[in-house]
Image (cartoon, rainbow, N blue to C red; front, side, top):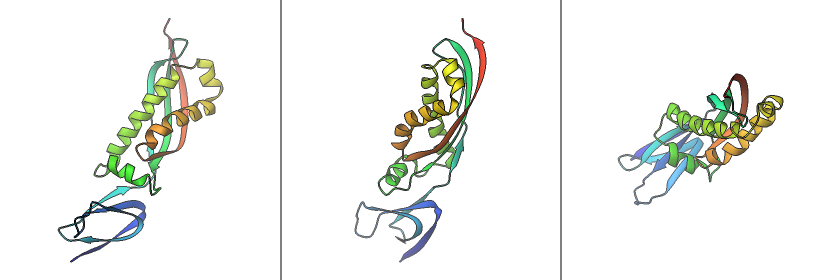
Amino acid sequence: MGNCLTVGPNEALVVSGNCCGSDAKTYVVGGWAWAWWLISDTKRISLEVMTLQPQCEDVETAEGVAITVTGVAQVKVMVDPELLPVACEQFLGKSVMEIKSVVLQTLEGHLRAILGTLTVEQIYQDRDQFAKLVREVAAPDVGKMGIEILSFTIKVSSRKSAN
């Protein structure tokens, strides 16, 4: 026979395989699904908000001044019916720590790239605009992984001059 599996609103259940040999997958958030014994495969992925702290140390600005930027980002797996399968393709079977690591590396890369194009004054004077720029640039890349950036803020500390 099989099992009736339930899942809460904070995780998604993916059921693959059935008695007819179909490649179709069922994605369930906050509901239930039927899984056949020995035929169906079931996996779960967390939909909870993940807090990341991207940090870029001694990154040179456009003026050659080394600064350290620490951010706090809130991200989560998207539950949109078209995007949840993308996230599952990327992260199903991975732990929350592994998912965080991949997204953190992406955010740090974008943060570093943007820092190199701005002056210290631009970064300090309008931190909200700087954080918004990082969100806008990073969102398409993490979106391709089925991840959504809910919020992103930064803290800047100055280092020494490179000249």
